[in-house]
Amino acid sequence: MEKLEILKMVKDGIITPEEGINLIEALEFSERKEKTIAEKKPPLQEPKWIKIEIKDNKNQKKLNLLKIPYSLTMLFLRFLPAQHNIPGYNVNLEDIINSLKSGEPIDLIMEKNGKYIRIYAE
Image (cartoon, rainbow, N blue to C red; front, top):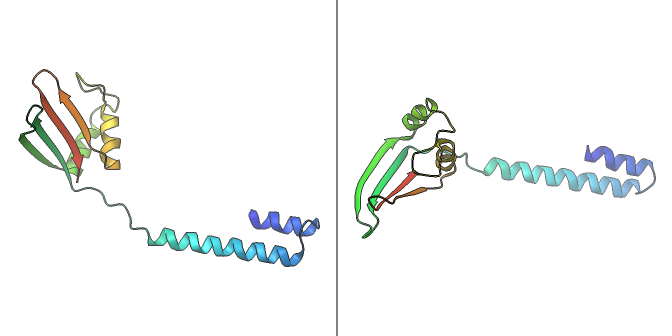
């Protein structure tokens, strides 16, 4: 599309043919550079584990660490409605899934018993 616009500018006399050639060469160089950069990016790897840490909120002592295979967790979550809210928290399963896929941890605080829960993918 951009090359056609450059050719049209040459045809209309807005730029000279030499300027058109220079613009097209610069455009092609830029496209090759972007392609090379895209090829060098490593593919995102799916996490292997979902870890759930439970700590005492007062002294930050780790009480439990659950380690669940990521693929099993994602399979399980498919059977629940995405908009299902977790009771007592302002978060739904869709938010949790998106956070896990993006690598962001999910932090929840259980106010009743002072427990702190962190869910993350690794």
